[in-house]
Length: 177
Image 1 (cartoon, helix red, strand yellow):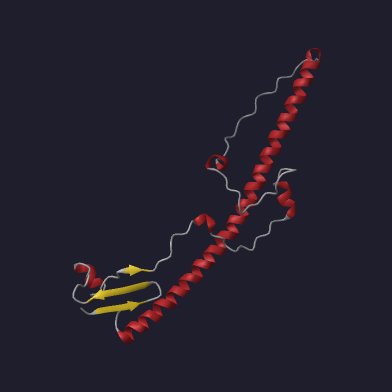
Image 2 (image 1 turned 90 degrees about the vertical axis):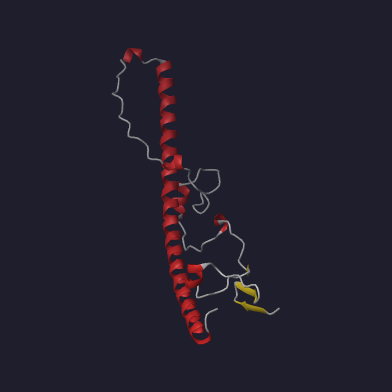
């Protein structure tokens, strides 16, 4: 029994001439009567989260300070991902009409509640401002990363075109693979 084997860097064809595996009808015609490969040397799948894209992005240290909680780790726009819930736009809420309290009702209990409410409002504003700063820095990083990825795709497409030209020239000279 005669065996024919062709090898490319990523595909190995091994065909026993007495038992060729041929694609059916139209597929065979589209492939030019080619024999299907019996094994492939393809790389194992890669987790997209582990891919590091070289991005020339260095945020302003002042922006990072405004986006980090004092006493905690500095905000890293490369690692921090926001949930769908965090990125949802907040509804515009109409402010309630102010109710003025007469001076004679402003006792110690009133002032304690006012101080507590003012501190809570300040914490809420600071948390919102922190989150907005983090989202802005993350968006800036993602724009730079997107630009780098688009450039990489363009380079890979250019390289693929060159490879296709080399393959076409090879097939023209030596016949189809």
